[in-house]
Image (cartoon, rainbow, N blue to C red; front, side, top):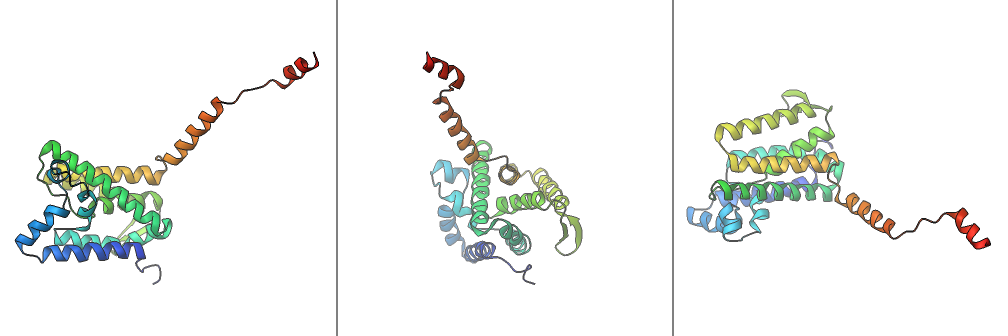
Length: 226
């Protein structure tokens, strides 16, 4: 039962998203419009009005109730496993980077395809976390929603296929670009392909070696004796 309990970071994200989303969903149309103009991201909002903070705040608001329920289930059932693996700090940073990557990519796609598409919710983080789960727990047996037995890798492949089908059938190209960007960042972070600190240390080491002079000890001793 202890392993099934939700962790603090996942609980915090769940509490904030559900709380703020319910406030939005229960508001009247005028209040919704006023709130959306300051917290919801779209290409027009981000790049037209330069409300760059909406790239973060928009993830805390979900305007679709079914999606909100889905997020709650994923945060409760799968996210705690990742948080126990990484710790709360890295887990929350992962949520931040994947949401930023997804929202930024979607807003840029909206700029190219049409700027009125609203980008809301934790979907980029949710799908990115499922990719991370499939990499870290590739062979781990999973009961998907307590019904379908599969491995972590199979669940990841199934979710990616479902997301791709949703994008194509619904022609959700703007949102789809955001999902793909978030999942790509997740793969880079979890697979170890993205290591800025290691790249910096290697660059620093090469730079230091340029200032070093290789001395032939035998030739130097002979010069000293002469």
